Image 1 (cartoon, helix red, strand yellow):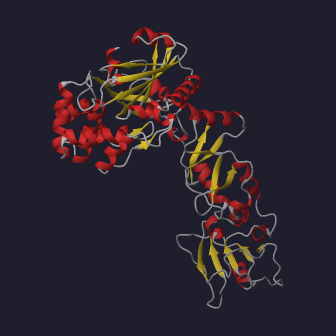
Image 2: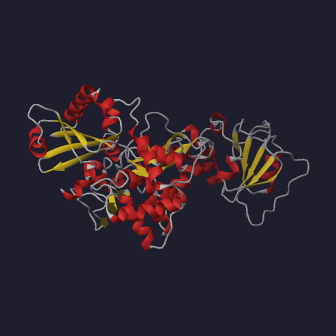
Image 3: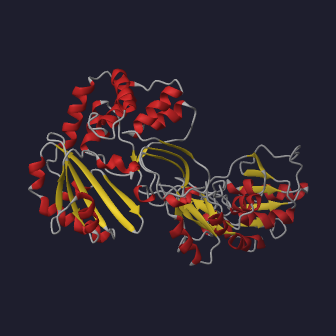
Length: 514
């Protein structure tokens, strides 16, 4: 959180702090004390649909005409597009082959009525203009006629539509037909000159299309909803993982797929080729640099920076990165130096969080990894945060040592890191407590949970380090198939599962010395 603030202050945009695990009691105390919300929980960093450069497509709604859908598809070079409900949720899809069936022209005079076509689609499709009157219904409820096939003796209904050419006698015949809409073709749309008697109440639509093209085009005014595909649609959500998307794509003959966001709104289209054009997530690793300690999928992300005080281990990067690693007691000491170097003062809340981290990592400067830089930076941060350093530190650690209501799994995951050393996979968990005896009462349950973790994660060693902040020193509890390593390193007696290490208080921060 402190480094995010610094990066923003230096001009970096679109950067967000994230955590990789639960917020422990000590951290929650600091967040509450300085009235700051916890950062977002990052479960993994695997590539998702949101990382693809997918197509954006202008919206086409179920009430829109087939012609509008065709125009969108041809303009954007798409063989298929999604069709939306009014709330931008997916109604179905429509393809060029679906639309091509409507291009055979008007073969059935009832086609608009049968498909409940919005009347407004008719002048829209014909690129026409209503110059007089109005159609009496929102939808076309009658049949479509032409003056070529219309007998002067026939009387039409006010819901019918009649198409006529530009000859005056044909126009007058159409106007007297009783139709609710007269479409006049072959007009100069920049200068329409049609004599409409004042007694005419029907809608008079003029179009620049020829008589025969009008007949051909009018059937395309039917709504998209009448020809769209609704069933067995393959679509993806914005947070779907690419591994799953790739498999789904391979199992279908479709080439394009709608994308939905978390509200089920359509965001665009992806195709199989987009799998080759993925933007890697950009990350900065703070207070860790090992693959096993980071988010799942870190190997598929682009690492921009590493700010850490641990050993540099097994994380490979595809590009050069900014790396700042120093042998100090806390990563926030390094970040504090960076604030100084850029002549930026952290605000009170950020200073308080930075101070909390240093006090925690160094056990209020009692840890053997504590340096003069840790003390200097912490002292300055305490002044900015307006707290008494020793008093606040004691309250912070006391809050973190409360183990009330915590299960063995909770205890083992307060602060646990994974390490790969040669052929060995090792997990090291660390707890600070002022009530060591109460923890020892549930030692058997803790051992059982350590054995479970060992099996589940295929570990060579599973270690829990319980630091007694009152007495000083730590109890090391060990399980695993390679337990003899701990026996040799820490003089653990064969057959025993724990040993007390006097004056060892914060092993996790010695890792850079290994």
